[in-house]
Image 1 (cartoon, helix red, strand yellow):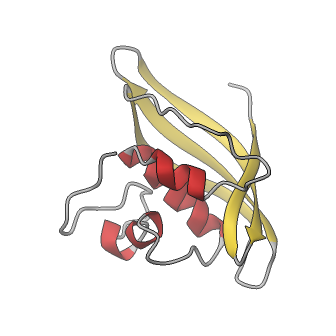
Image 2 (cartoon, rainbow, N blue to C red):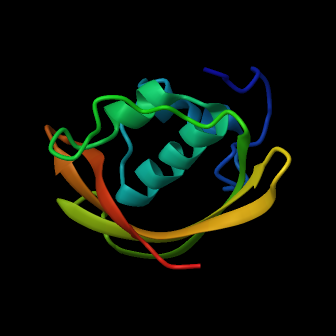
Length: 135
């Protein structure tokens, strides 16, 4: 797993905040995501830094795969949140629609557009599943 260096490095989720004030405490499990969108951002950041353990941890046990192999040739570099539906501090379900941008070594760039569903499970937000929009 690759972790961002300590210091004022910008968070991969493109919030404009630094790692330690944004997704860092969520990915390191120091803090729980307060909203479905915060969990979505932290999961994107986990993809960006190659943290498969956090991705599995933040996945609902009902839909979580046994193993998650990340493609080391993919570099996730930008996240655009398109919309959110529910997913606040007071909700138990939520949806986040996003576009994630990536580059594949030797193959160029691409995007992933998805509407992800989240639920609170055992008092914390978890990813349930998502519907990927066709290219």
